[in-house]
Image (cartoon, rainbow, N blue to C red; front, side, top):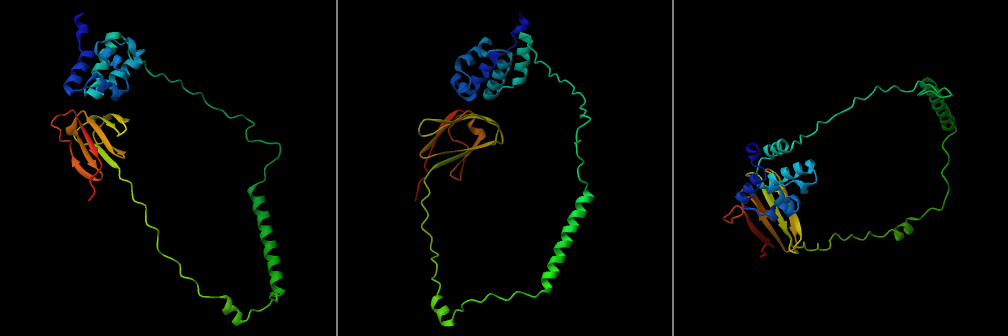
Length: 256
């Protein structure tokens, strides 16, 4: 039918090619298998596992390739007649506490009786203290007195404490790369010197992430002009790679 010719998967494929991204790049950023990404671009949503997952995959892929996911999801619902179900809530019935709640077999003591008992205890304590005070202070216990000579002999000069501190261990050299999206969003992937992926996803405008490695960090940018890079506290600006999609390696800073 002509009405079903509105772009859906083809729109995602065109946006991906315009960004210069491969299917594998989109799969790495969205954690969706490449086979499912190819099926979505071919308008085949059977492998998604249901309408809910299909909408989620459409939204994730659209964000990576820079497309607006709202008209794509609306077209998916129109074409496959799968509107999002409305959230239904049931009203809570009134809660009536049990009639015997808070009652016990014995009556609890009132605050007035507790206050009177505390006052009686305080008065008794003050009376006993007054009687003991009138009896006079007890004589100090007798004991052997230390002569000034003995005290002087036993009390020697206090040895001076050492104020020197052990030398601090040298700080290990590491590569610290901070990425901040300042001119829009960009898809980025970061790989360590051991080949392990540290991050792969969308860096939204205003968002920043920091990565560390003992030798080198390799960063692939999907929209290089939108990202500002700081390496070990030094602002190096946007990647100068000549294209929007490129890979830049950041190694250990030179030591003087």
